[in-house]
Image 1 (spheres, rainbow, N blue to C red):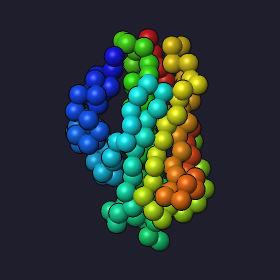
Image 2: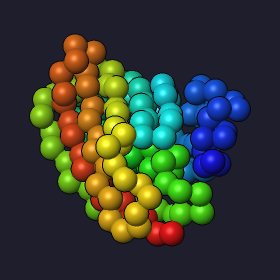
Image 3: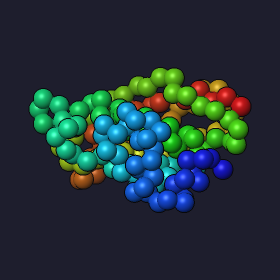
Image 4: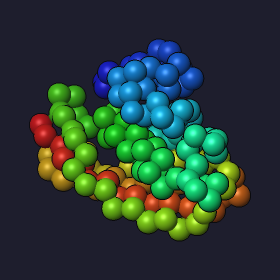
Amino acid sequence: MSQFLDMYKNVGAEQFSKLVTQVAPYFSTIDPEFVELRPGYAEVLLRNQKKVHNHIGTIHAIAMCNAAELVGGTMTDVSIPKGARWIPQAMSVKYLAKAKTDLRVVAEGEGIDFSQPGEIIVPVAAYDSEGTKCFTADITMNVKH
């Protein structure tokens, strides 16, 4: 089992959210709040707060990218076979609507075959409090066994 999944199960979502930002400090810039983490799925709450705003008062595109990499990476980590490694290699994003509320940022990988090494595309989407999809990302993860 993944170290991150072990940690998540042992300390719970709130404490895990704090610990993961110590492992990768840049994620602390968005104050992520994990909602769920399991093989094939990760969800983080990205709060609509001033420190993540752009010049028009909505959540900045790069804050959404940061959250996407966090959920995509943690979901990949808890989904790949024991002993495998991964690293993000590329990210393609689309900004679909202004992010004016808190966002649910979700990586769904239930249909991905993580048992094969190589490039794996991890889809991520961010939804506002009304359920509107504001952002999507396809993150290419390079998985090595």
